[in-house]
Length: 107
Image (cartoon, rainbow, N blue to C red; front, side, top):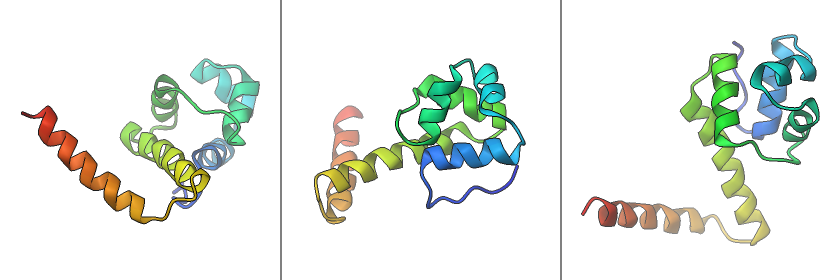
């Protein structure tokens, strides 16, 4: 499978994978078990996929599910930062909080 640019959105990456495979929206939607209009909206970044759908997409295209989920989640994080007009320093603060919360969960 062709390399997908990481500086694009999850939806753009999905469209690129589909087009590289030479498949229509309808064909891919049928295989991953969703409505073609929903797949089109995901490709246009108008709707978000579920974790289950991300797994189905990863399985179908033969890509790493964790990497695909990271791409999706990074879109969400970027969107929140942009919507809140927060600086990139927020990522450092979040990283520190993740480390702290891990220590709480691990006892």
